[in-house]
Image (cartoon, rainbow, N blue to C red; front, side, top):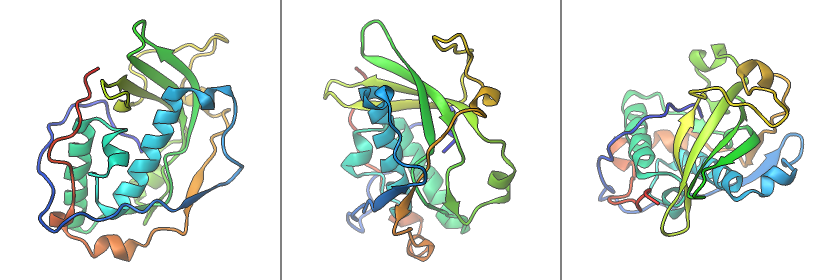
Length: 218
């Protein structure tokens, strides 16, 4: 899921149609689950949790679940809701077939330990139906997740997107779109796959976002 580093005001609240569950199907990895010491890092685990939560939430248009509010900033929860409303209104909604394929390469924690950047490479997000824009995009891409540790001890994603400045690994290699071409990026898909007809049965009024999300500020 390629999203720019932007700040968006949270708009809207929960619809009066009541809460809906956010089912998270099992996931199946194409080449086995990612492994290595970096996968045990709490900041990387927060990224994985956030991307899994987003993929499941997008398929039910429900961004108010605790899996989302504990992993994404309130700005993104509001933005996701705005996007979902627009897609349902114009009939271009897509189901997300699995979490964002991502290969973490480095974790850069700030001196105070309250925020960090997780730098790596991403592949295309699997969606159905696929759009022409997605088919023509160049992959893989260098990617940065910015996270903050809140007072409630949850690490939330507060920024995502292409690196705004050069990032060099301890090996001396710079993380770029070109260098990501040599990185193995594992992909996982939901099993069973989400049903597009279930999502299209909703309308923009069915989109759920929290009325008041937990603070992102550390």
